[in-house]
Image 1 (cartoon, rainbow, N blue to C red):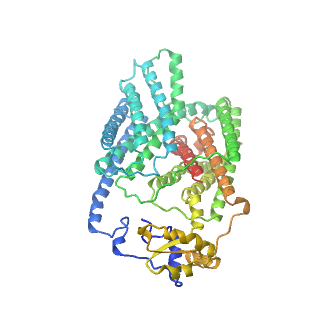
Image 2: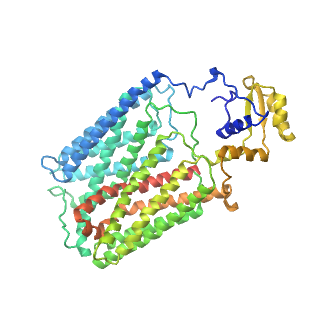
Image 3: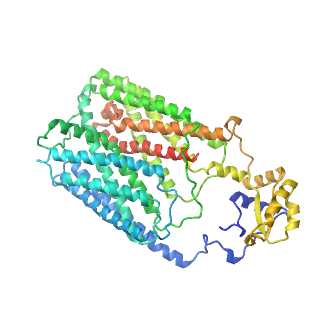
Length: 611
């Protein structure tokens, strides 16, 4: 809204003006001619309601189309996984390749049309497609392309007994990855206002194509982990559990065999990065879909800046946790499955490491929440699809690990025999639930806060009101300090004609401020932070907490992503629930648990830059 047309400088200023308007002559009646109605809040019209109906229908139809494509793809994946008659891997790959080619055609059309109209003004969502987010997806995309190259080499080695689709798929996927990253770098912030129905179908097709590629990678990686797990079960003394391997290896020899073995192992070590790339791309495309036809407000998003000063404590503790994680994972993978004694010692070592790290993360999150609750600031409640998606993903993906943890707790309580390492599993499972709950609260508190500088400016703001009355009597009643009057008077003379109406500037005294705050808030003033947490000290503490939690989430992403999964290896849950039911639960919940850690790390990086 334009300055000088009767609009207060901030919500707090508006409240102060309204309170003063009911108390005495110091108030300036705000002008409200009908011609000055803001274009951002027009009167409701029947035509506007009718115009929104086709948009809602297009959104509903496109979402149903995407769900149909996703369900068909999932059924094909399931049929291939259970060796259904008449469904081969080539059928699945043909379907996924067709989806990627269709998305490639749409992206090429969109990029070409945008280039042809590049001189036109385009609306942008400044919250979507942050620089660090595009940098992350680029890193994962590079590793995904390397994975595609390894798959091409694997196809060449087994070309005698593999169908041509297994060579076409990685080539198509690599081209799809290159163009999609280019598309997201250039258009992730777009707010599409033309060809909206067509664009909705194109974007939602891209969202579910990436989700199906993610599900395909998760299935391949899970089958590999399951085969390794079955081979290790006998060393833990669980010989009564079936160990039939689910083998999809080609029925021919590879030349040269040493190179083919190295390639097959390298493929599964790169799958975690491919999984993160696909789910990250689908979330960015989903935000683009939600922004189609959206009307943005005039509020500009403050650019986040990365500052590394003053976070030595959090960085050192986080890097220590990261180094300890790498050491634990290496020792775990070396010892697990070698013998029963070594396997049990590896499980105990992992549980002790995880319990210590989760307790430190929970304590840091509680400290951050306490600081936020004591130092009350205004919340940013503006409409933001990217922020809402972040919150929903944090809660939704955390439910995966909560499901596994509650299953482990029930298994420990209901089991008849308890090996020594199971009693370390009990506090570990409880801490996983509690720590994610605390961390989610800390992230929610952080991402919904107004920027720190904005809040401090509002606290020291002098209310400026434009009115139509006589200036001099109001100035004499409003200005209580000679110094302030001297500072203000020259500015009033130099004002432009658009704002040369009559300006009333008022600096409230302490008593009036207390009255205004009591009438505005309706509650006593909040408890102040301790002296050592005032100003920059508070920001440094919060930055250290965010940096520590960021590195700890990266640390906890590494073990399950690279095969360190005690939920598979301790065997107790499989005895209580049965082998197949528990494996199904773990295979469904583990991808969400892994993605939670990476997504929480991304959210904490945003929190760090925002503080």
